[in-house]
View 1 (tube, one colour):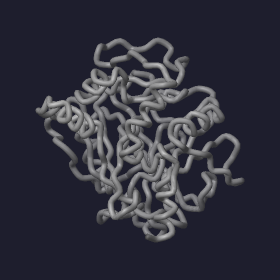
View 2 (view 1 turned 60 degrees about the vertical axis):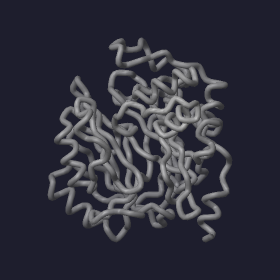
View 3 (view 1 turned 90 degrees about the vertical axis):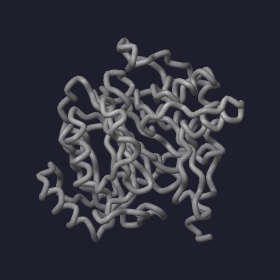
Length: 344
């Protein structure tokens, strides 16, 4: 095993390795799918036609992303590199010019390439946005982590490199993710005081910007359907990670499908909640708790289990909630399959 793979495996129980997927909002699903096919090389994933009224997922490399249809118009973007949540993708330094040409070809709003180490790593970033005002980045670090570009297609876009979120109290955020995701801050002196960088065990990262007021697109407002990101833990840590949360966090009895928006969600503490899919409802029926969780600033997540491929978590087989619930039902002799729906 290579030295970098040994370091990858030498992690605390419950460590988050990668971002498996994210979901953003869209007001036009066909436009969203076509745009990300042209810019990211995204491919169909799951049964796209079955739940079009909800949204669709697309395959990227060893990850995927989703666009969920929103009934109300999405809020205007706050500008390139300013909207949160936003997500980045690994790219190679030598491919930056090609990405710029493609963005220009399709008239995508974007920044110039910016060399930076402000998030603790040296590299080059390009900020860009989709037609729904969702913000993204192409991130070309000087040193790519193992697996970053594995299975990338002809457009040379790698897996999800990072998510950028907002926090009203960076120390509180750091404490939360240390406790429940075994993540510790990057201590680089290049990181400004208004930024918290949490390196993930696989080589990606989560980034938090200090904010006085949280943006409109954050998932915990309850205003928008399904906005979240999924964090990968080793499969044997999947349920223990949830049990740790259930032992310390309260349950938010919110179900968006009932049509009632929460009052003052920004005042709520960190919490767990129902995942609105069929499997998520079955999960809560069995365990009495939801598998979604929200940090102190309404950022929304759930876990995905990962089984190493080639003896390393650089590449993993995803074990979703649907997988775990099906295994549980079969072990209890209930048999049958959960209702078919989009992966999540």
